[in-house]
Length: 236
Image 1 (cartoon, helix red, strand yellow):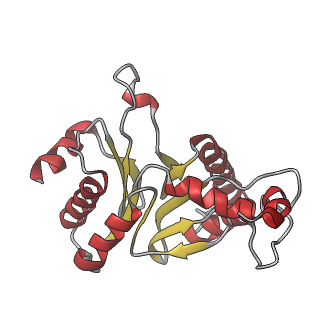
Image 2 (cartoon, helix red, strand yellow):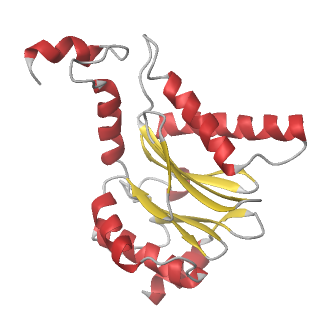
């Protein structure tokens, strides 16, 4: 960075002369260094797959959580700073429940994603705060069908048929460009996602180092059990 850019580097509310907010860009770098997180749609729903490698054999694998249950029909997976992700997950859960109590119906997936992105965008616009150093892949099924959204630290959102955030994004997206197709069967989509994760981290997978969540046409989000995970991993 040039010496003249240091002032723009320190302030979240000040644009650099070339129109950049450096703190937002640094937050994106934090996401790129995060764990590989994959989302892909299948015929009747969406699958979320996360690498949750345990850093030490002394750590309890169950204490590492990268996939969260937001509402009955919505789940999300995170990459980046875990503590930041927890705050956003709590906010999403509150927004979903407020909508349900106010209107007597489940919130739409896109409506909830936009609320979270508005919340994230606030932290790029005021002094004394910093952007959230995390990105979310939010998956759900509502009256309009199945949805997969990626949220950015800047507050931007993009809908995907198949996407990835974190360190393994280039490898996974290259594989999806070649092998993903619309309306895949559940088993085919699951095996493609696990295969892409294995290629991205270049290590053998186990039921303890992978976390998978699925929301299907019944509008029920669930995490797969270790025995279900082992079954898919063995099929590779």
